[in-house]
Image (tube, rainbow, N blue to C red):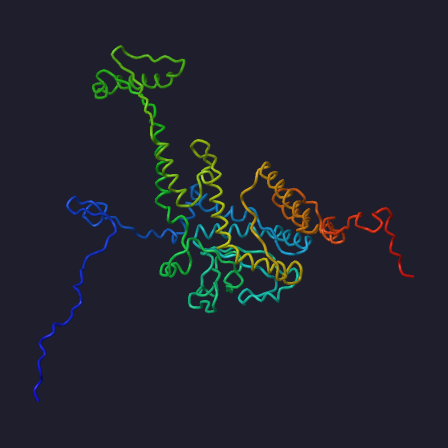
Length: 482
């Protein structure tokens, strides 16, 4: 049986692939304008500059350059400068004891150093020192008794070696991080000991993508690495400007037939040197310069215009790279009409508050749990909480304005029966942290407010005219039962 032919059907083919690079920039190949057009800009490349691995170079920069020192210290000091405010139902005496222990053990100083060395080297640890416990074992909070916590020990990235073969496998924020840290033999404390990750507060520098984090032994990078070229440019320009000061005032002295005098040497040369030395020694505000009638003396003054603008531009680049305003980094007042720098500082303080929540809150929460058990001998309650104190401080006028508006709002709510007297006193004491007013309200005052009668407006007092006697006689007191 033969096959029937229905004609040839052309196969459907995919559209031809176009092998051309996709770019989102303007390019003119004829004029060689734009990236990829064979011009000099198209040959620019970014390369790795592994400054974070050069510990000696980082330490030299930190010790020698004040810009590098400010880049490392400013944010760390601001993150730990104001402390915290406990916002739970903890008794005031217990809260004072807890905060006093924080000051006694210099916890904020240790956390500040941890952040500093994390920013300088790319990572650092704050080890929880709990008396009588092995640092290589996982931290068991229930095993902490009163008086066991002794403070924090700061170890930078070069004092410990993370165990890359033992990583945290449990789900959580620590997953994928080293499970143990081996202290190096040249450390002054905890020499050659193994520390479990649950007993440290780890802070990294600039966070890196996965493969770069692997290359850095799971640490971050130094904050100085990104702005290394800008710091060199700023310091080079500053040094160059300082060297130019020596050339700001040039003096020239023209001597007739000087080449012949030099060629003859002998007495003629000695006389010329003696004359120049005399001119140098006696040329002052009140001195006279003696010279031959054919000699010529000239002074050339050189002006350095534009150097201040160049230095300012380099400083602004460093400020932008660090996200630290000029008023904080250089102590420089902002330029412009009515410019105070307040908006720049507020933005910077918001950035610091973000860093506190991202890098400090988790470790500080664990630290306060340990500290609470060590100070009070019991774990904190479920409502235990805290907030970082704001870095922006109100002026006296602003405090007075906040106090006036808050007092009016609370009194208005109390008069209308919306809140009770106890709530009003609690609100007054709460706002005292900001305004400084009503700070003498005690817990006894607030507790006694429960026994005080509510405002008159909360009772439905009948009108005397509605009574049968028209209010002419007083109501008889209710006799007590026999």
